[in-house]
Length: 367
Image (cartoon, rainbow, N blue to C red; front, side, top):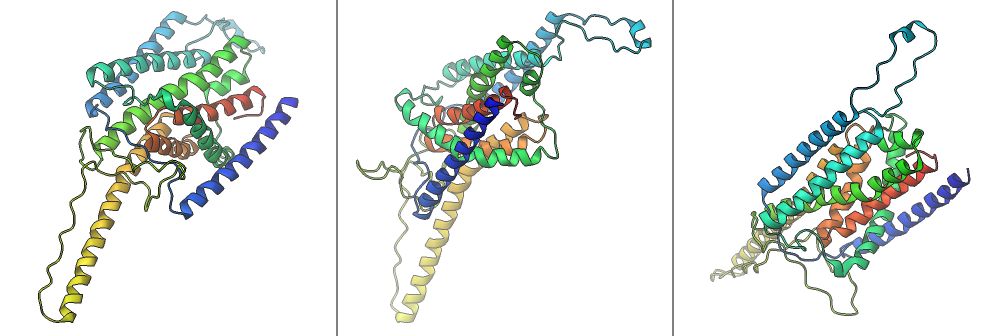
């Protein structure tokens, strides 16, 4: 009971932080500023075949590791057939089976770690990716932690409300919940918490944001291919200015080379009516061109976020209605990565949500 009371205060704090965060978001949007300042980086060097190979490697790792765990468990103990004739239900086998939640979680964790290591080696040596391409910028760690916590504060409350409403219609299922609801020992609970708070956020954010979304941003950038100059940031603000840059329309990715100037109009002599008519036509043409360019830029940023969020949600199929709220949470994760192009902000945001969920399970308050 005391744990649940403490968690109640934590929930109230999260709701208050979420309201404050959304007030800041509304103020920035109303003033025409970006919620999080866009930061530049070169387009990632890997291509679609690297992404396909990573996905295939993950599926292969899950199958191989799962098969290894199943074989290591051996056949379950046979249950005495005579017990079926009695009124007393037979006890389940004492040894863990391949379907045991802890065994399943260990298999998935092992597959995630092995795929993560394989992907880092593949992109480093196969695509010649550097640390910044992989989202690793150590000098910005403190700022990235703050961004991740702010993202969690802003998005977690609405997402948790959606999940709680959906649980009235669809039962939530997850191996982590089953482990905490069972009679697992302390070591099993700590290993489960480590998977949920460290391994899962690290590997999933790397796969879905850095690898998948990073490649899609390069493909859908202004040049439409994987060159090294497609993503360019707004100029940095002067020292002492606000950290957010003015942005006429989110998102605002700009091509590297300067856009060609619109040709000037040579107005022939023919009276002021003809001159003004031609000027109006030219202004309309320029406005349409700018609108088309802005729409293309918006789609070039929105599509990668939407695709990576959808893939992230689909990976959680089988966990009740969780894919729906997780999709909206992943939109926030994708936006943080798109603006910073660093792994740590979405990683902290993801880990914070999982840490809160584990704390609630540990206190017996549910997901």
